[in-house]
Each structure stands twice: as structure tokens, then as C-alpha cells.
Length: 315
Image (cartoon, rainbow, N blue to C red; front, side, top):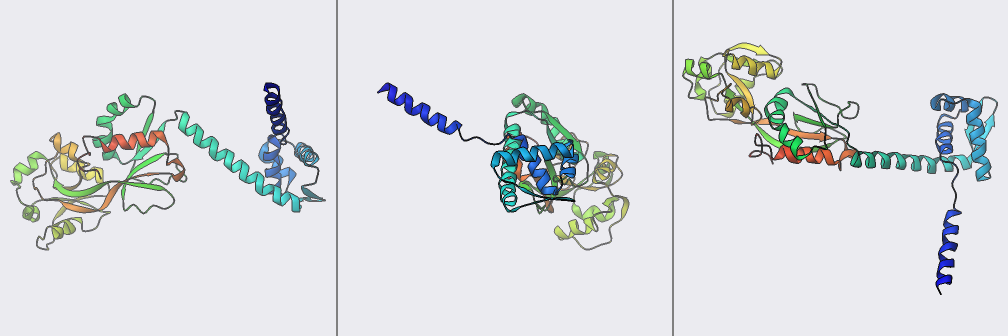
């Protein structure tokens, strides 16, 4: 009985092993030659000679037992069998590429490249980053800051933290936070003008943002304040610069909270009025759809949600 079972196993193993494939490197050579319809161009792409391409294609055709190309005086073209075979080869190569990327991403430890705007990095991420490193020493973080919108289809980032409407195409989007706007200034400025009520904004210098028209009028309207022509002594195209000017006591600025709460907690800025209004944009995490299962991205976002600087406001 034991002998019979053993014979059965070896018989089926031999049957399985007899299902041979052509040498795997022939697939990529065939795919390039078929796609480009040229042995010369395929050779240039693969850094081998046209004669080497021709020889390898002939080896593949010999293995299969039929031709894949029609040879012409000025090139080659796929025959009916070649067109069918190309479909399967391209599907297989795509599947191998996807699988290799997923398994490499899951089990290797590449750096997580994050793009965000400066105040998000300095006020929220960096102050608590040591806690993330302690909890996840296997994840290397690289942070780059800037105000330009990141296009993950072309830029070399894995994750972007951005303020917007959440309508970016072709990516995975996770809403992190509802944002609000409040007036801020230096402690000295608030004391100098004895600020206690939003109605006083018509009596003090205001810091404006040139790329956001009528922001003070919109803020006042949201608080049901009278419509007036508010004095804008300073105007900046950069949000960070407007906050720095407010820190220097140059005027009253509008800040996004809770992102700027760190500045208020450190008393670099104060919020002289309790009132705040909803911002028309929110905070989002954006990453590629194919990275949806990445361990490092989920670790970072889960940590960010629990960050003391944001956790009471995150959704």
C-alpha cells in the first residue's frame, strides 16, 4: 500500500514538472519586439543587438512549434498566433510586475516619502515625530515641504498631506480633518489694541493673502459683521509669511486651526477672539491606489490621527 501511494505521488510530480515554459527572458524579448514591430528597436530598448533579438525569437518559435512573426524586408509584424500570444505574455508580465511591487513594498523597508506644507510639518508632524520613530523603528521617514500641489502620478512621493476639496483624480483620498479659520496676532499686538471682539477688525491693521481674495470680508460675513472696507496694511502671497508677519506684531492674520494650535500654545500667537468659522477646504491624506495596503502609510496615518496636536479634531 505504501509503495502504491509513493508511486502515485511521483507519477503526478513528474506530470506537473513536465509542464515546461520557455526560458523566462524570452518573454520580455518577444514583448518588446511585438510591441515595437522591430527587432532593431527592441534591441535598442533591451541593450542587445538586433541579431540577438532575432536569434532569441527564433528560439521561442522553435520551442512553441510555430512562427509568431511575419518577416518582411523592412521589418516584422505579428501573425495571428503572435497577436494571441502577445496578449497572454503582456498580461503575465504585468501581473509579475504588480506582484513584485506589492511584495517588495510589503516586506522591504523603503523610506516613506511625505510631501506636506511647511506649517503642517513644523507644528504637527515634527514635534511628535520621535514618538512615531519609537513605535515604528522599521519605517524611515523623509519629509519635504512646499506649497505646490503634488501630483503622485509623476512626483517621487508616497504620501501627500494637503489642504483642499478632496477632488484629486486618480488617487486614494482619506479625509483627516475639518478645518476652521480664526484671527491671530502677537500677544503684544492684542494688548496694544485691547482686542476682545471681532467687531474691532475694522480698527486695526489686517494682514491679507493676495491669492485669496476678500478673505477678511468672507470671515466677517460668516460672523454676521457689518460689510466694510477693511484696511489691509500688508498682503502676502504665501500663507506662512502672513503668520510670520503676525508673530512680528505687524497685524491681525487669519490662521488655519487646529494646524496652528502649536503656535498659540507656545504663545507665539494668540487668538484674541473666541469666534472661528468653517474653512471651505479640509485636510486630506493622498496616496496612490496601488499603495492602499502599504504598511508604512497606514502606520503613519494611524499615528497622525492620534497625534496630541490633532486628535481632538480628527474625523
